[in-house]
Image 1 (cartoon, rainbow, N blue to C red):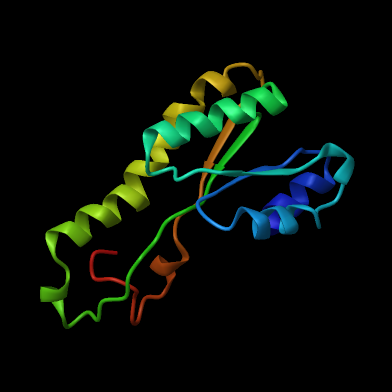
Image 2 (image 1 turned 30 degrees about the horizontal axis):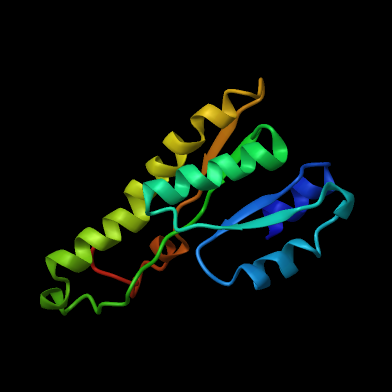
Length: 141
C-alpha cells in the first residue's frame, strides 16, 4: 500500500487487482489520497489467463488506459529446508505458476491497455520470502 499511497498522492488513480476479499481491498484503497480519482479494487485470479484479461478489460473500461503496471503477487507454503520430500511436483508446479508464470500472464494481458498510453511502465516486485536467508519459506525459493 505504500507504493499506492505515494502514487495516489502524486495524482495517480489506483486500480488494485485482488484475488480475494475485494471489500477489504476497497476499504484500503478508500484511505488513499486524492479520493476524487475514485481508486478501485477489481477481483481476479491472475494465475488464470481469462481472469487477467478480464481485469485488463475492466481497467480499460473504467480508466481508458494504464500508465503503470505494478506486479506484486505470489504465494508460498513453508517447507523446512531439511524436508525435501515434502516438495512434490504438484506443489512445485503450482508455485511456479503463481510466482513466475502469472507475472507474464498479467503483462501479456495488459499490453493492449498499456499501448494506449505514451508513458507505459511495468514494475515487477518479487517476494519478500526470498529475503529470509536463514529459514526461507520454501526449499524451491
